Image (cartoon, rainbow, N blue to C red; front, side, top):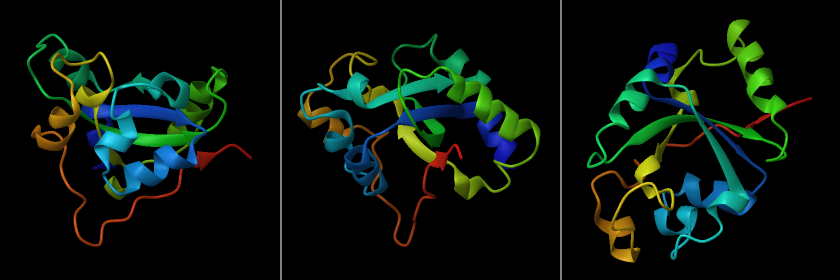
Length: 142
């Protein structure tokens, strides 16, 4: 089931930022993306894997949400993607859908037209945190 979610809407997010993860854990979307859209590219890299997500990118009016696996690591290190692919191929990740966390891609600065502070508080893709939901800590190479 987790692999199906990832196949359709999966994204890999690389970050070093504890503040980003704390905000994301709380679904504090303005803090995740920056109230003014600044700083996102200095705090995260997103790699899209989900084929349905890629197809939906052809419809610019859609509010897209990816299902993310997070890796803690250096944003400049491209080997995180290959490392994750190895974990995936050997069945070490994506054994449970709760490993995935939602990321409203439409909130990434420049992704969607009309991003302003009101957008991050009212658009349908920015859901509040479900009661009792906790996300797994990021994957760390070791």
